[in-house]
Image (cartoon, rainbow, N blue to C red; front, side):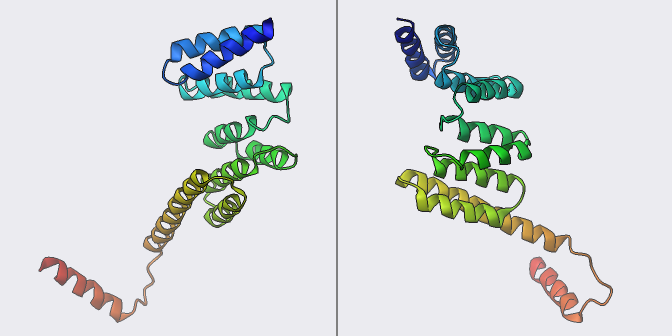
Length: 193
C-alpha cells in the first residue's frame, strides 16, 4: 500500500512540476515520507532546490542521498554533474563523469554532454567539441543531435571570441611595420567618410 501511495504522490509531483510548484513540492514531501529512498523523488527534490530556491548545498545533499540509495541509477548523473559544473566543483564533476561512464545502463550521450559542459566551463573548447561529436555519434534521437549542434555552435563562437580577445590584448612591439600604421590611418579616413 505504501508503494502505491508513494507512486501516486510521485506522479502528482512530476505532473505538477514546474508549473504548479506548491503542488509539486507538497506531493514530493508526501512521496518521500512514504519512501525516503526513492531516487526519482530525491532527484526531483534536488532539482526544485537548485532551480527554484537556488540552494546548492541542499540540492547536492539530495543528489548524494539518491546516489547512496542506488549508485547505478542513470537518471541521477547528468543533472548532478551539471549542478557541480555550474557551481565550480570541477574535480568532483570529473570524478563523477569517469564513474558514470564506467558502468552499463548509463545514458552515455547525456554524460558526454555534461562532460562537454565541464570542458566548456574550463575554456577547453577543442576537447569539448570532440566530446560533443562523440555524443552525436552515440545519440539515438534527432532532437538530441540538434541540441548538440547548437552547443557546438556556441562553443565555436566562444573559441572565436577568445581568439579575437587574445589578438586584441597582444602586446605592441616597438618595431611595428609601416604597413600597419598606414592601414590604421586608412581605416580612420574611411571611417570619417
